[in-house]
Image (tube, rainbow, N blue to C red):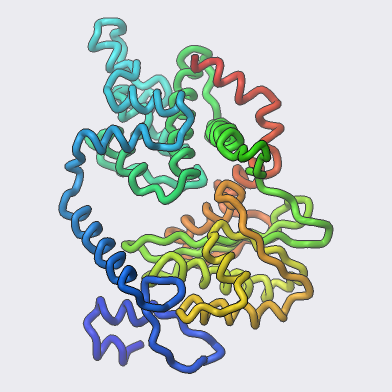
Length: 401
Ligand SMILES: [Zn+2]
């Protein structure tokens, strides 16, 4: 490591260190980064150029979002219509918070009814209120609200939505904003404050209801919830969080066939070449953890379709990912039963949560009792249908209307 730092400038040294090393010491090969197969085509160069151009443009354009793309971002988000309508009203500045009502002479008191600590502007109610921040952070997306009080909800939310890499996350962001508003209304009209967990269950239930509708394909519904494993099989959900700025974080959760938590873990790796490599390295890390804990019969679940396809393919990709998958195949012989499934993102929420937690809790293993926030998602995996049938979902939805 010292030798690399002494020869190369810091940026290059960081990139070199992010190349995954294999304990098998395979022979050195030239590989093209930026593709999962490791081969270079003209379109590869084109895509790499576009990515770096877009990044450069995004970093210099800052918050100067043009109105058409701004509103498009909201209307193209994958939330339920009622959630998008509420967000649209918040961004338009017409959501009836106390500050808006007092400007129209309807009320005099402008103090936030939830925390009682500040004026209830739209940005405060959905974003800066300490109670709202707790919900955002405890969610499977672990959203951190920036501390600047002057930052408006509209710009912050549009930026969040624009960065979303899939429909599930986009729909959940809308559901969380809506559930926070619904929680505020319950406090105002029913004098009852839903807990953070209850608010998140409402948000998750709303996302699930939307997915149930969206996933009916040719009359056949695709499962949209996490499923328990068969008797004696341990289910491993794993996921890698990745961003060019913060690098990669790994998350893993192991549950028995009753859905009870056996182990959960986080690991922060820092700079990583791309998201696919982070996913493959996360799989190897998860398998090593399972081996260390003596788990023998496993089913691994990933929401990364490319990784699943690469694992299922007979040929090994000529890439860093290929090296990592070869390590995984070798590790597979350590287990008596091992299979790998691709699941929808919403069935892998626990691992998604843990991977993002890796940015703050960098190298941790929890046995039988997970970190704060994980229990909410574990419970939701086991009982989302019962939450909905218990009436919480419908009762609170009715209050909103
Ligand atoms: Zn407040």
